[in-house]
Image 1 (cartoon, rainbow, N blue to C red):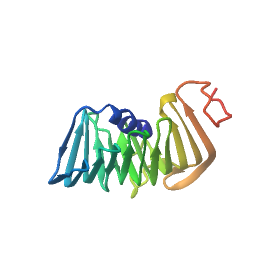
Image 2: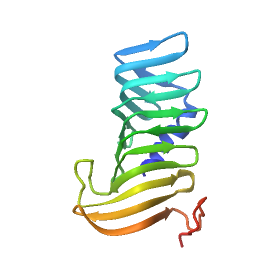
Image 3: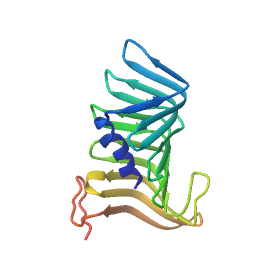
Image 4: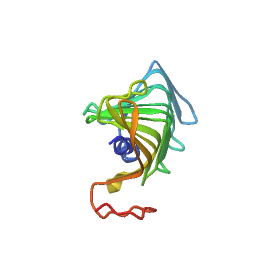
Length: 194
């Protein structure tokens, strides 16, 4: 699932970084311990390759910023493309603008995502197991106003959902709850998956 993968990439991976390789056409490092890179930036962290046009790292505050057209790829060929990824390591939070994900026969795209240690929240999401991107919709897809993912609990709650078949809305469901384990009660959720 996109959010769990994104969560693992940012919240779990970055605090444990011991070795980062940074390649770029232009890299600047100054007395304030701020690193900036522009044009064909490539950041390699363990099995992840992050490519972007702009990169900013403030080592004083442990804040990363990846600019527009950021692409993260892992060894399993999962790919997420996003705009303006912010990661604050001490607070274990992050955010990004528009994003697309493809991997494990899942396709997602949405307007924005917010990351924290406990949850990943995404807005205006379209997802399917059929190939899709913002220009095509695939044979079927689900559109949700928001999804809140609880990666450590293996659960998510989606709100205001429409099932589309060939661009026609055929079913509306106000709330969708998915859990890998039954009887997991989510904070703020009254319903159990039985």
